[in-house]
Length: 256
Image 1 (tube, helix red, strand yellow):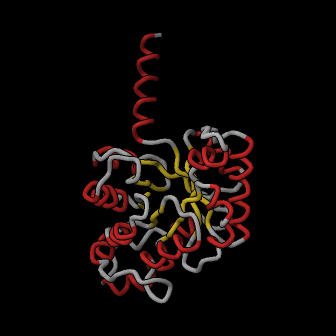
Image 2: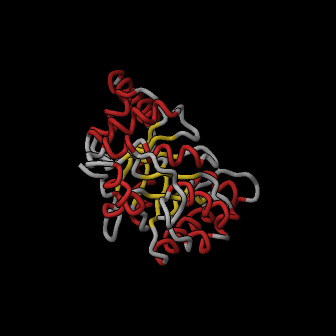
């Protein structure tokens, strides 16, 4: 088994719906990976994850035949490469605002000549079934994705320049932060006109640049809307959110 071909899965006409994990319990990770999601994303920035829990989550996800993604902490380039070494298929860097940020991200996660990723993918090669680390490194630049989060007004202004960077595979929209940043009044409104227009602009610009457009959706309804406007990778809800919703639904049904 090689790295799941996430790039091919989100290519022209493709679509991947990813689960979103903020909890550290391996049984929860397995439940998400066994559900009919195309991938599982582990949230280090706002979730409860650390290196150990992400390592375990990646392993379970990969062993069940699905790609694992990791949303990093801000500017955490060291762990960006480390999570790829642990077998992740994609890493998402928050708060990329311009060319310098994006280039530093690419430099950390791509092997030369695209970047300067440090060599040490023993676990990734073993987990994905490569004969050795060199077989992994031959395909890693193409098959592991670097996605820059677009969630500020500055990032939106610099979108074209960010997307033009060689080695950056695409962008990942954070609708909540983006809506707050664009509101001018610190107002959360991801479904407001300003945010919706920006979200459409981002997907169109990414596709024109030949890059991947991904986004987080708080609900199934949002996920469908983002899919319908052209996003090919959508992470939806969260493990905790689904647990709360499922628990409440059962209790309400029993109560009648």
